[in-house]
Amino acid sequence: MAKPYLSIIIPAYNEAKRLPLTLIDVDRILSRAEYSYEILIMNDGSTDNTAEIAKKMSGNIKNLKVVDNPVNRGKGAVVRDGMLIAQGNIRLFTDADNSTSIDHFDGMTEHFRAGYDVVICSRSVKGAKLDPPESVYRQIPGKLGNLFVQALLLPGIWDTQCGFKAFSERATEEIFGMMKITGWGFDIEALALAKKLGYKIKEIPAHWVNAEGSKLKASAYLKVLLETVKIRLWLWGGKYQLNTNNNQQITNRTQ
Image (tube, rainbow, N blue to C red; front, side, top):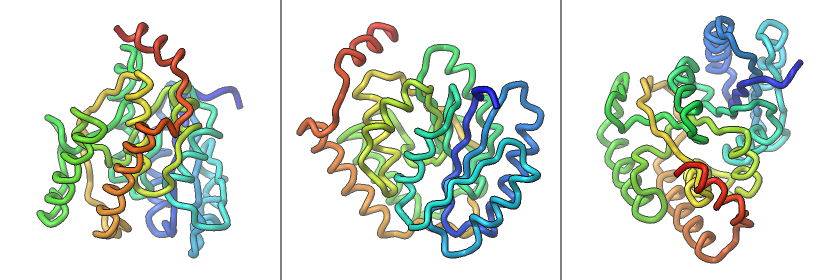
């Protein structure tokens, strides 16, 4: 297969029930696409038959590949691996529950053409639709947490946790190559590094479907905030091997 235009990375942990329908929908939409693509399922040490189901579906789903990790390493770890082994000019990760459908990518392409290197879907910008809206008990910590993240790392980014984000090949290889977070806070780390390196970030509205069976526990919110503090300290402490020359080149290019 020639180098694909788009790589889709789908992390999966015990997704035997939800993944098949997601893959069928992704295949249905992408089969009409005029660009080339690949789909990577990153099995994160599932204890059910997620990997087996994905491998069986590779016979019917075009350009589907399965990377089977024998142990659970965390969403951040397998997304990072998937983004780095992918071959696409643009590399997108999305959730196995299909809460943000792959057709959102159509709304991203114009921003990549306009010079953005990172385009993310958001549930909190004008035009976003939540179907149905999140319950109040999930909205409140999410909104408060976002204000905390904005204050420490990402001012102006209103939703760091929507699981549908795309990066140019260049941005992917630089950002994901230096990431450290293996858990839920990896989204924040990726965006914080993108901002630090001078990459342009565009936030677009999502039509987000509240899928049943969410694995995000209340304790995860606290962990994400702690990881946010870690990222801030690591940036201050020079723990990331940032390419300052490339940073200046990107800054000049985007002015």
